[in-house]
Length: 256
Ligand code: NAP
Image 1 (cartoon, rainbow, N blue to C red):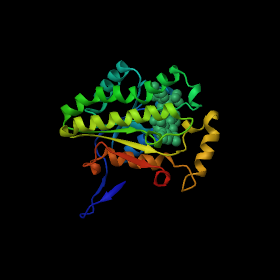
Image 2: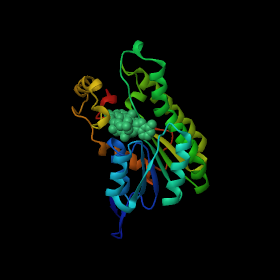
Image 3: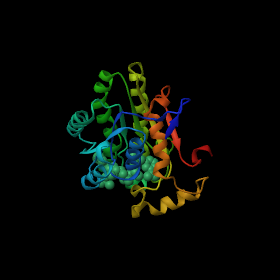
Image 4: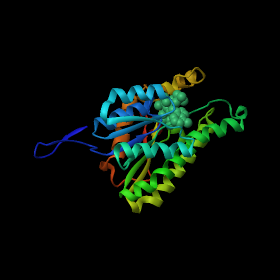
């Protein structure tokens, strides 16, 4: 987004800030990466998909680097932040986007399924925030955007453990927001509805996704860019008085 001020000067919404995006090689994460760069940020793309992440970083040139990061691993976070800071200096923005889903009837879930989802959807945010907050505090501020879901605001049949993981992450978002507000560090969550990404193309959830679309007031899935616009707003100083809040982008579902 380019703004023109009263003197006719062009400026972007985010300029010269450094960001880390997890799960940034594809899907919504890729859209967040592209939009942040469009708005003037330097971005560290992280993912477990190395080939895709490196290809994207190469395409984006000097504004991006790729660092392999498995969000479930605390040591992996330390190494990624070290590499990010040596490339772009103190990190101003963290977008905790990496997430996974498993859908089936509640009684068929195993404890291992639950652990797997918590490892990525909850511990990913936990490790990321724990590792980045000391440097954000030292740098005088920052913005953390945790990508949740509508499923972090309501329950859905077949999606119980995803619901549990995303609700838990919402609690973490709010508590950390309370704890760090006085340090000029804001933490918000974004709750997308059905968004067209590789994450919703898996065979086991195709029927669920089609049924989902019928109940969307706008009668279509969202585009990753439509979520990225909101992420950029929350990452930027334009949202300077918002913290600990839930931001919905869902084509009208939750209004019903
Ligand atoms: P996606 O297309 O599957 O992309 C997520 C990326 O994160 C993938 O590259 C994935 O790699 C990576 N990833 C998985 N586990 C990881 C780990 N342990 N460490 C680092 N990266 C990891 O997903 P998406 O649909 O864009 O979703 C992005 C976020 O939005 C997720 O948090 C999701 O829960 C949330 N969300 C999605 C929708 C939707 O409709 N798409 C709706 C609401 C919320 P692999 O492909 O190898 O797993």
